[in-house]
Length: 99
Image (cartoon, rainbow, N blue to C red; front, side, top):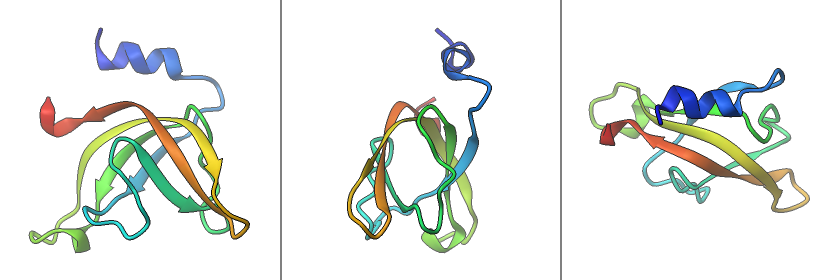
């Protein structure tokens, strides 16, 4: 099954399309294609079934250029603490480097 066919099954009227910045050595605990951590007090637009693309910021690599390297769909979001920290579980991960 093609990626476009898989994504069409996920698309609903209220789905958001997002770009998530991720670094190789994240102090936040991010695990590419598995978990994405963020704070709802600062960023609170993500919800289950939203579709995203990963972006590696220019500061995060030697070449000093940003690039897109994968994506996926948000499966669910778990509250971590009372300070607004949450983690989003990723489903249907897609690594562009493996295509």
